[in-house]
Length: 58
Image (cartoon, rainbow, N blue to C red; front, side, top):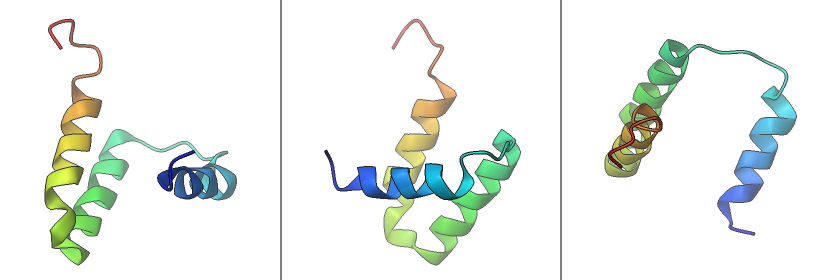
């Protein structure tokens, strides 16, 4: 188990029944980076990974 699993489990436990749009998620990620600019690179990589999940080239 990775340390991040605890945060993911908390997210699922607290908000797992909700449905959100990708636009909503994008806004939350922007807010997070505005508050925590040191995480800009990992958030950019995560967003790019999500955007390209269905790309056969990767």
